Structures are given as structure tokens and as C-alpha cells.
Image (cartoon, rainbow, N blue to C red; front, side, top):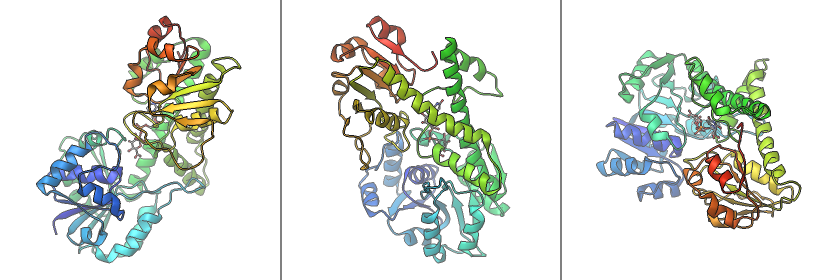
Length: 425
Ligand code: UGA
């Protein structure tokens, strides 16, 4: 009866389960995907997330972290339940909460008496009120505790949060959840239920806005022959602005920013409002991908026959390609009839949806460079910044590099005879 159940063994669920176990709690993590649970029981993490595998292994061997494919089994021994189920985007941009609704409908009677149900998934603003009605258990309390974990840094972010947000009608439930994290010096923001939900969307939207802003400033810097990094440093040192998320690049992607900005815009529409800043950030992000396509295609006049793409993941440190700008850019170039060879050190499989026949996913750096007219860096993997331009140049047809992440040593590439094209510099 003293366990914590974590429902969903995806990136958020597994990180939450392993980190709570590491804090000394007895955790049982459940996922209806039996293959996933079988892999976990055999010590295999079904996706790439640095530092997670050893944490899972240690806590499994201590017995503080267990797995099951039966939600009811996890629930019947737990007084606190973390829901970490997916909320993908529907075609109209709003979030699909059907996994959560199905879970609550099927399992509401499995919650133990006076159970606390904690929502970690990003759910639409106001959804918590609906879920409470669906649970319909007077003895249970519902809490919103949004996650702020970055892929590739999830364990670090869980263990070193900037703040913890906990929203609920019940002060007692807020205090029970707060005590779980054992982080004395971290600010805890105790809120109403819907405020906690809004904080998650507003945070991701603001960060997206910040990146779109610096991408636009980078464009302006290019026109004015100013270095955007000098500008970013100069503005970021103002503590009111902050230096994080001021790296220009090929646009923001991933499973969160595109989905959450679009959900917030939809929500505002449902309230008769237009969030013009967030809508502009989304539009600027689409434009940024188009800008990078143009940079690449126009970098070798009209005779660009083959482009080598370095990086497919939406950012370094992950194998996730959901809403990856790199995929969108590679696809747009291939759609123009140009041969595209793409490599990523972590991405092994691409989606089943049809990519143009001019697109080839290759498994080596040599293959991506061989015969290419232009090389484009779209994900900021350290392996790419360590490339030797002289070696790369020998393999290519022409020496042109588009560094959409500004991670290469410009001078070294120019000295090796490359035309170097960065973003905002
Ligand atoms: C994001 C948030 O940062 C997390 O706090 C949040 O918990 C998570 O979404 C979520 O909602 O679950 P994540 O999607 O893992 O995390 O990725 P970020 O590291 O935030 O990067 C998002 C995108 O912005 C990437 O495409 C990245 O390349 C881009 N980016 C980021 C830039 O182009 N420039 C920057 O300076 C920073």
C-alpha cells in the first residue's frame, strides 16, 4: 500500500519512476505495451536517454523499481499514482487525451482508498476538472504536477529542477506530492489546478517564442553582417532576458514545442482570443525551416545535384525525430529532385511514411560526404563539430558547408577551402 505507481513507461514515465525510486520510494511502473515491459524487465531501455539505464538497473536490483503490464496490479498497492501517458496532437492541433480518459474510465475503481492521482502528462488547460469528474471518487485527490524535462537531459532535469509546480484543490495532496521530491531548496509553486496546467503551456510557448525571436534576429544579423552570437551574449546577460534558448538554428521541433504552442493557440481561440505572439513564433518557425532549405539549395548555384545532411534528430542527445526540423528540411530538398544522403549517429529508423525516392538514410559519415556538393549540419552532435574539414573535403564533389547549428570552426573549414555558410554570422 505504500508504493508509488507510475502509469506509462515512456520517456517521462520511466524517468519519473527511476528518479522517484532513486529518492528511496518503492515504485511500480506499468505500461500496457507488453513488449516494452518485457524489454525493461530484461534491463533494456527502449529509447535513448543518457543516464537513465544505470538508474533503472540499480533500482531494479535494489527492488525499489518494478515493472508490470497490468495497470490494476500497479494501482492496487499504491497510494500515489503518477499518470505519464501520451497526449499527441489531433489534426486540428489540439491535444488528444483519449489514452488518459481510457485509463481513468477502465481503472478508476482500482485506485486505493484516498489515493492521490498526479497528472504528469501535458494535458489541455481545464482538462483536470474533467478528469476529476471522470474519476468521480470523493475519497481521492487529483493533482497537476507538470514535467519540465528536456529529452537528453531528463535525469539531470528531474534531479535539479528550477521549480516544482503542484496544483490541486487539496492542500493536503499538494503537501504529500511536495514531500516526495525531497528538495528543500527548490521553489515550489503551489497553485490552483488549471494554473498548473497553464504554466506548462505558457513555459513551452515562451521558450519557443524566444528561439523564434533569436532566429529572426539572426536573419537580420546576416543582412547587416553582424554576428548573432555576440548579440545573443550581449542581450542574454541581462537577467531579465537570460542567456538560455538564444541559440539560432534550423527551427524548434520535438514532441513538445510544436504540440504545446499549437494547443495553446487552439485554447485561446476557444476563448475568443488570438495569441498573436505565439502564432507569430509558430509562423516564424516554419519560415526558418524554409530559410535553411533556401540556404542549402542556393549555396551551390543552380547545379546542386547532391546534398549530405548531418543530423536527423530534432536536437542532439536524443534519437527522437518527431517534428524534427532536420527531417522537414531534408524532405523539402529531396522533393526538389536533389539527391539527399542523411546520417545521424543515433537515429536508426525513419518513419514508415513515404519519403521521396531521392532521399537516402545512410549509416556512415563517409557515405554522407561522398560525392556531395553541399554538406548541411542540422543537428548539433559533438561528433560533427569534431570533423576534419580536410578529410571531409576529399570525399565531396565541392567544398560547401551550411552549418545550421553554428557548431563548426568556421576558420578551419574556410582554410580547408570550404565556402562556409552559418546562421546569423
Ligand atoms: C522541452 C522543454 O525544454 C522542457 O522543459 C519540457 O519539459 C519538454 O519540452 C516537454 O514539454 O516535455 P525538449 O522538447 O526535450 O524539452 O527540447 P528542448 O531542449 O527544449 O529543445 C526544443 C527545440 O528547440 C529543439 O528543436 C532545439 O534544437 C531547439 N532549440 C533549443 C534551439 O533551436 N535553440 C535553443 O537555444 C534551444
